[in-house]
Image (spheres, rainbow, N blue to C red):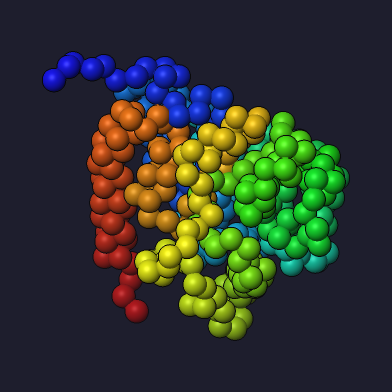
Amino acid sequence: MTNELLPQGKAAALLPQVSFTVPGLFLFSELVYQCIEQVEAKFSYHIPVRFLYGSPQIRWNCGRLVLINHHESLEEMERELKGAVQHGITPLLTFTSPLLQQEDLKDPVCNGLLEILEEVRGGVVLASPLLRDYIRAHYPHVTMHASIILTTYAQERNAAYYRQLSQEYDYYVLHSDDKFQPELLRQLPKHNAEIILNERCGYQCPQRKEHFISIAQDQTALLDGCGPLSNFLDRCPYVPEGKQREMPTRSISSTVQEAAALAEMGFDLFKLQGRLDSPYVFFFDFLRYALEGELAFPTMYPIFSYSIYNHLKEKERKRREQAKSSPQK
């Protein structure tokens, strides 16, 4: 057996010309930082994570239903946002509810978070032009990303539509169905486009709009304590992914070859989902898109899995201690 050295520097990268937007804020941000550090120690390659997104349980959240808020005070939320900045990553809050009304703009927690983002030059992901205009008027240093939720409700997603989004927002997220349209892709502005690589929904899913509306409604119901939740995922044929076990068709999650083709077209900011995934699932995706597949990825993922295991074990230990110390009802 030859003593083959592991690839170093950009030779360890699958796509050395791209950077990433990843989830984990308020959920597993420390694991994201550990992963970046461990990859750099092993391969002398710093995975370029440009944005880290997520949300506590707040009124403007959508995209994923936040059931538990581990950051109850604004001070704790501030530490989480500033922690990303200290690691050289821009924090993004998912202010993506498509149902916001004028009265909702007064929400004190969300405005408090915007004040922190204004200070640290963070950003938000948006699906509401009303909220976009409000933030632009009151928090001019907060960058704005047009969410996939916004594109879901567009009457027509052609090149002209995306060019307009590119002008109205600092970044725009391409609808996941559209990454399979090469003629459209060639016409799009690429300098501020984000493409989701690992969404595991079905192509042209007919329930996507209902899904996003249900999340926004359920988040409000949780905060206000009014009414039952919609339990939309009980009706979803794709999520959780175990439902796809016997499906003969693929999901719209990109292969590494498809991701490489998008990079060759000039797209250089790739987004990953995974806020509700097991960390094992998310970091499998993160590392397979970030690292070359012959040596770097199969070497790194088993190593980092131990960090995930220890993280989850410590989290469970703290949960049990908290349960013991909580007063019995």
